[in-house]
Image (cartoon, rainbow, N blue to C red; front, top):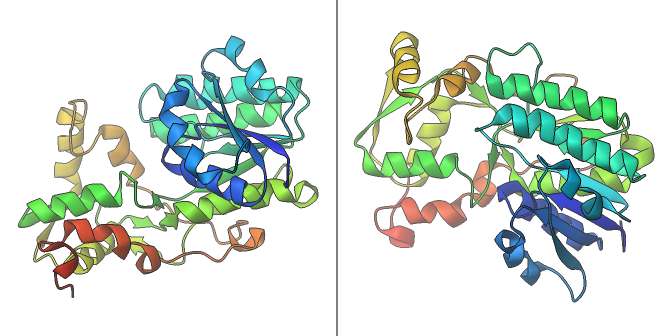
Length: 309
């Protein structure tokens, strides 16, 4: 890894900042590829002089990709979306993998997700599964990483629930029995760096990334409530009602849950029993309690002076 050049597509995103940080700490030189490179300029503070550079590229436009992957040792594709999923997860993933293969890049890492399955009933799960298939076809030795729900200071998951719990005395819980295995974004970043550091062991393999705790959605909401000192009462929403809500209103901007998200909650989001995981890559999984206090303090009634359970 030291002095190697790595292109990171989506380096300015939530997971991207942790991946870039891990690569820089490993001594790599990083080229951040974004549709708007300005979005990722904040990463400069993490790098030594000359260690990071930027290039404009769009994974949905194949003609923009060759300059982004030219002369690099590894390519990382982190781009994902809950909108235009076919275009991003499948077509875009194929474009990046094909460009990397044509450029003769030694290593390619593709960020997928637990639940990726071409037979999935959810559009997200299906397109993630199809994305893996097209990546494998274009770059057979690609390393595929499938994280569970990723948490960190900037996440749109735990922060969303924490904000709702802060505002609502009675908070509805949809899919309360669905199981998750939240994984720290920093661990995902280190997993990417570790995966490309040993290609002889990792090339062509798939890894499922989960944290040390398996929680239900109900457990997770309770945990957030306890850590923020909230007195919120949680009300389980029956599946029939939540399904109707997702179907009738899920298409609206700001809807509490989309139909596709509701479908995803019908399956557990946990690491398979025999899957390669963080431990295979030599990474000790970080528990929620080890890092979450640092940012959940903003949701306490009296900030850092508030009392928690």
